[in-house]
Length: 392
Image 1 (cartoon, rainbow, N blue to C red):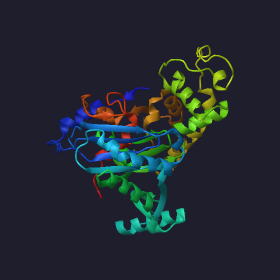
Image 2 (spheres, rainbow, N blue to C red):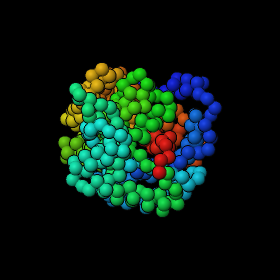
Image 3 (tube, rainbow, N blue to C red):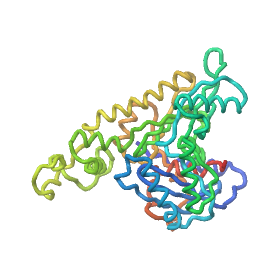
Image 4 (tube, rainbow, N blue to C red):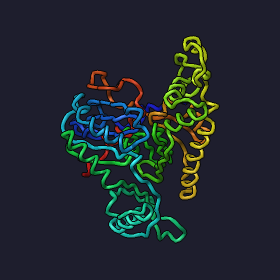
């Protein structure tokens, strides 16, 4: 499965554009991700250039505790920002998908203010909370139903307390908050920024993350569908650990080193017998490479069913604009075995996308905890935040 460089789109966009936009750095983008806290900054030029990047891995004991993880990351953010050569104080951050509610709703037609109010009330009703306890972003998909009297709306909401926590974290890092965006909006902005969101093509984007998988469908820059399901690389590790009766950390290491899963030949790791705790020398047991693929079949089926349901829902809403291609991104998209399994589910042309791969990098940019010269598909959402409007 080829990795999309989008270089042709990038060159076309550069030739066809007007005067270059300001080359001043864009806001510092902060991604409070499950596996890591990521901070990146690019210039505001038509062809973005990397300014700096920094990454701090999440301690494994915090993977399954979103509140404790966010507390750790917000505490570490000031030192992480100081560790690299970020410019200016303006910053935008990503709303963590684990703390964002995404719902497809149908509300009565009306002016934008009325639609927003109706969406907020409907979201609060489904979540059994006070509407004022939510901070809402919504996208109007379009009229639905035979009489076309209702609008399909994608509601993206976070608890006001979550937003206030993230705002305080930016302030504590001596940053000026200028934007806060849900992941689906930021991811689409990333592909738009590099000219890869084709206007006449309906595309399924799958952000394969460690904590969650984000699925969204768009036609050009217009978002038509969005959904997040709590199933990512972490769930694959847990499934493997349960099946093999080993620790999650050992299951993760086996998955990470399985060439059938990653598509990359690596040094052999402990055999399945050793992982199960059998006695014997580890040195003598590292001649075999356990193939995790058969033991993940059930997990693959769950993930595939979730993706298939997304496609079916979109087809029911827009039968004249079915999904024509799929783009896989996110940190888990580097695992070609996983991508091949999902490709059989979507049954359309599939490619993997790395928007950060299109921006100019010299290799001399300040960086901490990240190789800015290699593929960076797990940074797509952070890059999208950097390229999104400053709307606070």
